[in-house]
Picture (tube, rainbow, N blue to C red):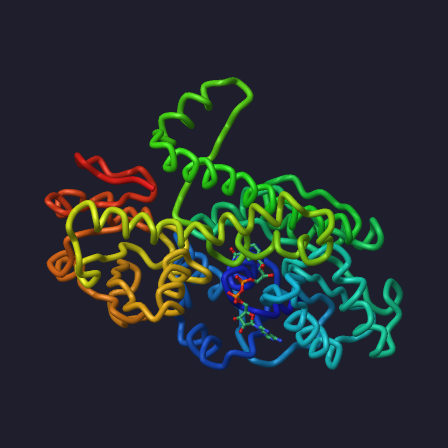
Length: 407
Ligand SMILES: NC(=O)c1ccc[n+]([C@@H]2O[C@H](COP(=O)([O-])OP(=O)(O)OC[C@H]3O[C@@H](n4cnc5c(N)ncnc54)[C@H](O)[C@@H]3O)[C@@H](O)[C@H]2O)c1
C-alpha cells in the first residue's frame, strides 16, 4: 500500500493515477476540509480529465484521510516555498510531514519525496529527521526523491506521458520505486542519485525562467525604442538554431516563479544570470502597470476605475492563482496605496477572491473602457467581439481586433 501525503495539485492526481492503475493507495492531508470534500466525492480543483480519474480511483478503492498510515511506502508531496529574504528553499513542510511519517512507519519502509527541493535539501533536512527517530537509512528506511514535472492544465496527460527522474541511494531501491511509477507512466523513467534528481528538477524550471526572462527583457528593449518585439521574435525564430519564447505579463505558479530562487539562495556568488532573470520576471507586472498608465494617458482615460484586468490565474485555463502576475500587480498597487484595478476571471465567477473583482463578464465590460488581457484563457478567445470599441492592452499578442496595444 502507498500512503500519499499531501493531496494538492500534485499529490492528488498522483494518488488517483496510482490507485486507478491497480496500486492500493491511501491519501493523507492535514487539511480536514479538503479530505471531507474528497470523501464527499468531489475533486478540489479543476483539471482536464481529473474528475474521470477521480471516479476510476474511487472505484478502485482509494481512501482519503487526515491520518498517516502504517505502510511500506510513502510519497510526500507537500509545498516547498522559498524564504523571501534568503531565497533558499523553505523545507519546513517536508520536514513536518516526514516527522509525522516517522511516527507510524515500520522498518523497511520507503519514503519518496516528490516535492521539489534544491540540491542537498534531502541530505540537510530529511536524513537527520529519519536518523533522529533511530532508523538507519538504507537499512531500516529507504529514501528516494521522485520530482514531478506535470504542468497544470494538462496534468493527467502529462502524468501518463512525461519522462520521469528517480533519485535513490541504491539502484535496487530506485528500480523498486520505478516499478510503482511504471504502473501508469508511459515515458522513460531514469534512475539516478538523490542529489542529481534534486538538481535536475530545479534546473528544468530555471531553464524555463531564464528563457522567459530573455523574452520579457526583449519586450522592454523593443518598447523603449518603438520596435515590434513579436515581429522580431518571429523573424529570429526562422533561424535554425534560435527559439525565443514569447514575452508576457510576468510569471506565476508554484514552480517557475519559485524554484530558480533556490539556486540563487544556495549559490549567490554563482547564480548571476538566474538572479537577474528572476528579478526581470518579477518586475514584469510593474512594467505592465506602467504600460497601462501610458495607454490611459494616450486615450484620455483619467479614472482607473474604468480599467479592468482580464484574468487572475497564473496561466490560462486553470484555477490556480498562486503568485499570479495579476495578483503581483494588485499587490504593487496596494503597496502604493492605489485603488486596485477591477478584474474578472472566468474561473472565479461565484465568489470574489480579490478586491474590485467583478463576477459577471458582461458587467465587467460595461464598467470599463480599457481591458488588459493578463491571461489567455480560451474564454476570452471566444469573446473578442465583445471587446470591440474598448481600448485593449493585450499582454500575449493574441487579440485579433484592430488597434490593440501590446506590452
Ligand atoms: N503545482 C505544480 O504545478 C507543481 C509541478 C511540479 C512540482 N510541484 C511541486 O510539488 C510539491 C507540491 O506542490 P502542490 O502544487 O501540490 O502544493 P499544494 O499546496 O497544492 O498541495 C500541498 C498539500 O499538502 C498538504 N500538506 C502540507 N503539509 C502537510 C503535512 N505535514 N501533512 C499532510 N498534508 C500536508 C496541504 O494541505 C496541501 O493540500 C511542491 O514541492 C511543488 O514545488 C508542483
